[in-house]
Image 1 (cartoon, rainbow, N blue to C red):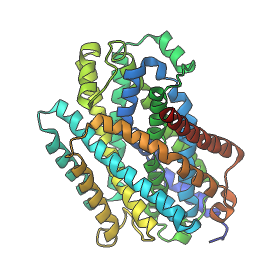
Image 2: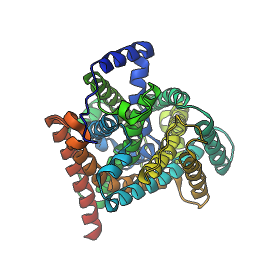
Image 3: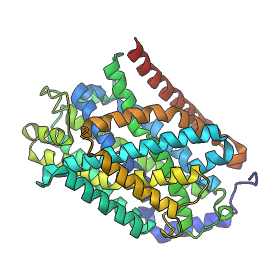
Image 4: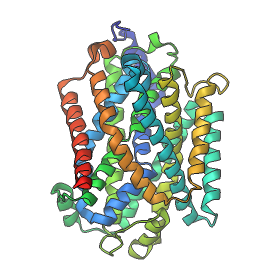
Length: 435
């Protein structure tokens, strides 16, 4: 376990050759997939609610979140790449069970809630485009997603995810159709206006929770492992360690993906902040209401673009969450599971994906409001982020895990600052509830 975690020089050559064969699009694609999954319907609901409630005054959250988003995804990627296992498999190797089981349970439950809320978001948005009952849409969407996960390959899913990520550009177009005042936009972006009440702080925590969601850590660390398996590194010994070229590729992927995610975050707040808030529509109760409310203010095009973004990224994010829940369970119990394995070779893994999908569908028949559930799921994620991020920072500074690839000063500065900020944000929110 404590063997040196540096791959031999020929792995640099292998990685360079792989990039040449796969092309730049492939290298950028993995980062963009993670960034798009971070802007899932839960995040869209949260950011749209923030824009509607607080207007352009909430735009400053985007540049503040960008370095935080980068560092948490980078350390999770580096964990999977250097150690050769997914996040919770590493936690199982390094920490006692009383630490492992609560974080696995929290992440697993978060994935189920997010998947259920996002299926509801898909149903509500797609219902705006086609006259089909929302429950029927939820069932059909879940069935299609599950079929691709069970019968498709990792490579197929990755390629589909890349194209689905493009749906998020709909929010850039929707924001431009709103014709916001450029001067006001710049002031709101770089001159934060803060309030210290429960309503404002809860929205900050929700934005932190959705942009730094725990399912993203699980997905990113395991995606690094899946990518290495796709390159023929099937054993742990082959996957252990990382070359300089591989880490540079990882940093580039993460920067690309998180910048993409952050830009979309910004334009979602801008599209609703420039339209719904000035019109007095500060409470968003459903995805359909959020999209339909844009029509008289920004035109029918904005309505359809908003709905299209929810549907497209929903089909990307839901399998990330259900697969993430499967990773959580199998790794937390010491079992193996991979999207490269066939269902008969990883029965618990695929059975968990199916069970989580069925449970997520079932939760949609309990009558909860999809958009409100999306925002509350973001707040729940906000409370689960600090302890898991604390563990990730400890592990990426542990030479028994990382060898010579422990964090540098800048990564530690960003990582520990982000950990502190997430703890303080949730503590402030709790304080406002108590007082």
